[in-house]
Image (cartoon, rainbow, N blue to C red; front, side, top):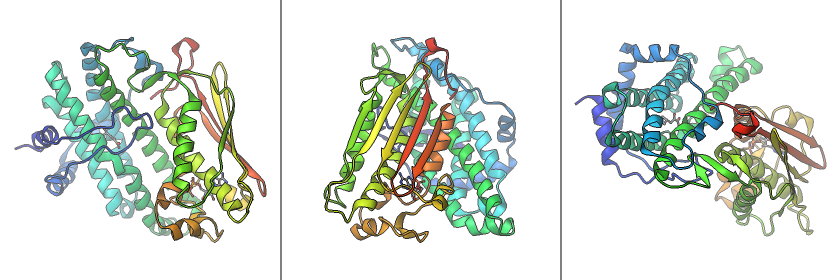
Length: 419
Ligand code: ADP
Ligand code: COI
């Protein structure tokens, strides 16, 4: 049996429950393991004989304007879903081939790291499965679209740990890369940063498109006033901010009695069409840092912790969310490094002391709260991918202000970014 049929059959057999409607969404869904090792060997061996990937990597990807995702109108139909599947059938292999090319351009010692190799193999396998689906012909019938949609669910699930794997991989490769560059930290940093920025933002785009398709499928025939695929028609930033802050505050309750409150001001009632998935990720990372900073700075004080102040400003072209904490800010030697992958002061690793002790003593959900040193660099890359920016102003001894500015996607306003 061919590799592709094998995987497609596995895809159909596996009963995956997808977190389709999750607005904070790019999360693992479940999994399948059958014959994985064999598939890995086959795909990797095939890669070196195969010209499809090289050919696809030469094509340019077709990045859609965010507003174009609204092409279906209010009531998505089966025709819309077929069009969406056909677009993904031709577009995903090109994007994935670009990613594989990126892995191939890494130094040998890096790409052979088991975590990094695992991710490259996943991309090779996904390239094969998607480009050979329906024997490489465009889907035309409802049944085939259903099979394709189910396959996407499984691939989204299977790629769920890509960020963790790449983080671990690059972290353990650091010294090898440094050796390649004769101890030059800047060059080492540039290589890691340019690879991870490109890979992770492209992955965000791929996952947004795939999730859009899955959500559209659920909305067929429904008058979706609130959302079309991943686009929420009346997204209210204040609502997501409150939900994310509440979740992180609750996690902190395991470690301290009275974590800071979050206070909202500005355009708290504003609503507009938006794609919340990327922005929710960024907000989560920024809030984790703000909570940690305030708690670390005030853990030994009997007084109530100062609140985290969030200001929302919605303008015609863009909107800004400012998250201001009184967590004593950062010294300049820390500020200089915060945008670097793997830089963290959690767990006192870098010799700055800190709340890490508090977290590791509690020995529970520490990883949810800080410690990988990837939150800020990924968030900045995502913000820029979404046509915006993430900026930080810190006053050492006082606190930190984070500004997230993003463009609207409203087609009537003429401003949009591409996915
Ligand atoms: P992590 O939170 O896993 O350490 P990040 O990339 O999110 O990784 O942050 C990197 C570092 O930047 C943190 O370890 C911390 O030293 C510093 N930092 C980020 N935000 C703040 C803040 N609001 N106040 C003080 N320090 C901060
Ligand atoms: C990823 O999440 O890394 C992907 O590329 C998912 C895609 C294969 C559906």
